[in-house]
Image 1 (cartoon, rainbow, N blue to C red):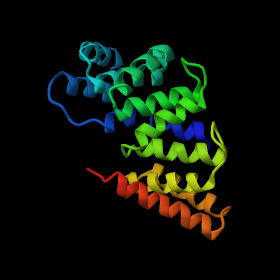
Image 2 (cartoon, helix red, strand yellow):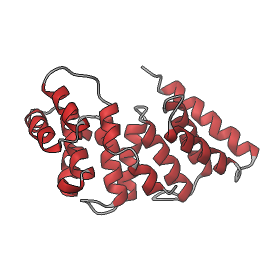
Image 3 (cartoon, rainbow, N blue to C red):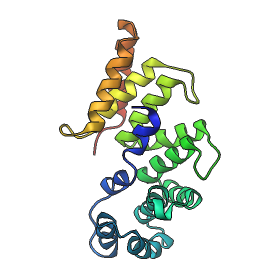
Length: 203
């Protein structure tokens, strides 16, 4: 599985999973998305987004990015940024993906790395895994197997413990990159992962 395929496997689901259940219009928007009624979802989310609701902003971005019939990458980038600027990890992840692919914005690996890192530091597992890919491939950064191994290990720990294909992918790539490393490098990656976990305790 290549990085683009992996990045796009989450799409809308990341924004849905990253948000708490909220009674009222927001919840109605989530139900509309799950029912595949994106037009209704947009109508519900737009007033909330205009009021600054980061969750609604991120879901609008996801709809514009992922829904073929409504695809508008410029709008997706706009709404992801609104959410990301408020520190919303879903918006940060979405904006990172938009910059990585160059959809609606010029392709910019440095910007992708920046936004993925902000989301990853909040424990967003897909962003952590995407950082692993970027360091393993040298996308916008010098190729660094130690960093790749660290981020894939963190991602594997962040994804659900069972039934997660994404967790399996992160573990698989962690093992693959470990095969290219000497024991001292693996130990360094593990040390960095421990330090990251200590500095970012789970809430």
